[in-house]
Image (cartoon, rainbow, N blue to C red; front, side, top):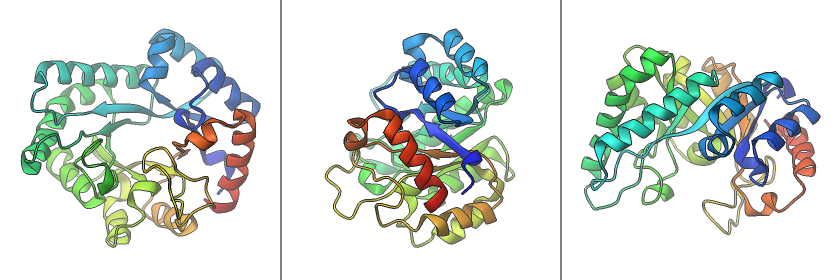
Amino acid sequence: MDAARLSLNQITLNSLDLPAAVAACERHEIGAIALWRDKIAAVGLDRAVQLVRSAGLHVSSVCRGGMFTDPAADPAAVLEDNRRAVDEAAALQADALVLVCGPLLDRDLAAARARVRDGIAELLPHARAAGVRLAIEPLHPMMIGVRSVVSTLRQALDLSDELGGDPGDEVGVVVDAYHVWWDPELEGQIARAGTRIAGYHVSDWLPETSDLLLDRGMMGDGLIDLPHLSGLVADAGFTGPVEVEILSRRWWAEDPDDVTRLLRKRFEEFV
């Protein structure tokens, strides 16, 4: 894929703070970045906005909102945190706010998924008023107890149908290669998503992963047919920045400039 489509997801260079990540984008001629809220908080929202604008960077997403599922949480506090996330995404002119919907914390999966639906429905008017697109990210079923009860693209699109109205409306989805590549319904669901694809994230699934959360592979090192997946996403109509999002203790320990040079090369070769 043309390197002009590349967006650096901050977590890939997790050792860097926001100023250093922005500088890395400038050094390596990367035109877009995806920001994480802890990195934004570390410098303050105003400073974060100034940094990305001064560098001329496009913000492909802010991560994350969501976490709707805790039955013991104060619903008002959850909503308020999500509204702050929307406001941050609006200030940064991000393409989308990524929603990691929340884990199963008891045995009532149906109730947890209902809380996700209700939480997004409550948040949607604020997002609509702020001009921020919400993007539900389905996560691999291995994450159901720690990150999200939304495990497939079909589930995410069903929520979009229920909450966001017509395709392309305010509730979109993220296609993350690491989380959806295994799905036997993937081709049909990506086609169904169409203009509701609000983000596309790439990494690779290693044949012998040592950590299901923090051992993602560099593109080309694993089992995912990324050229095929990229073709499906392109055929569905997605033309936005493509985020390289590699959560990996291995790569975090390497020199960030070396990692960035390699990921740029692999992006052109395998994505």
